Image 1: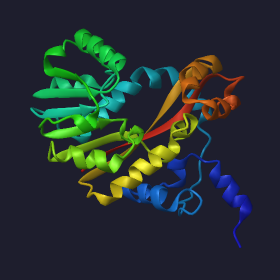
Image 2 (image 1 turned 135 degrees about the vertical axis):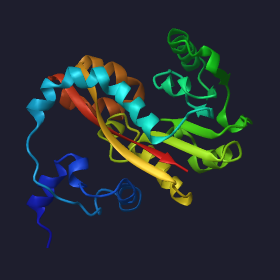
Image 3 (image 1 turned 90 degrees about the vertical axis):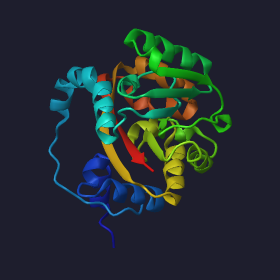
Image 4 (image 1 turned 90 degrees about the horizontal axis):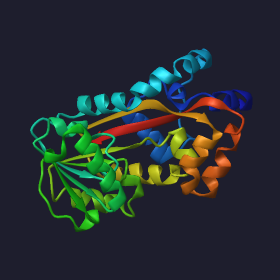
Amino acid sequence: MRNTAANTRYKKLPVHQLFKGCSPLQLLCNWIENRPQTATFHTTNVDNKQNKQENLILKVMATDIKKIIENLLEFYDFNNQTIISVGAGGGQFIEYGRVSKQVIAVDNDKEALSRLENSLQKSQLLNKFTLINSDFYLLNRKGDIVMFEFCLHEMKNPEAAINHALTMAPNILINDHWPSSEWAYIVDEKEKVINSWKSLKKFDFKKIQQYNTVQFFHDYEELFQKVKVQGENSINRISQYKDKKDFTIPMSYGFALI
């Protein structure tokens, strides 16, 4: 018989602590095949680090995007590469373009591409990027790598997207939310994220890595404004934060190279 009290206790722990000792690929297999209810948890004694985390909130958020970019540049060598970037609108992670040969940035959202263009102008990187407003499935360009920027889970058929990408480049890089991410649950994208990673099982991974960070909010209203477009489920899920100030929500993400 299962120890119900123990199971309840461990479920309250952060996922990255529950699975301590597992490789990123083992973690991914647990989530996309077994799902949380049947995954083998690696238990550990955990100290309460909440106070320390709260004291470091401002420092963490000041370096958060920078750290994601550093992780990305460490994960893959973009030097002198022609990159086809899918879902590139917004321009938060454009620094990879600084060392690249060329970036072909495609997004089906015109407003997102406008934000990307503004970011590129400010960063003096516009000459490195070619911006294309198009459905990815209609794109026919050639490069060294196709990179999906936190968008594969939004595509109707992730497997078809990867197969199409393979006609354009020999390497495919997926940057996306990790299946266990609390933030993915909050914004009601968890099922799409799980299904997206599950679709990748049919491909061979050259390299895969999972990372943990946080989303920071000053108050409930700031969080509400960010997630309201996600719908009723997201709004209901953030009710626990109504009386909180300067709080974080864990966000896990991963990079996978095919």
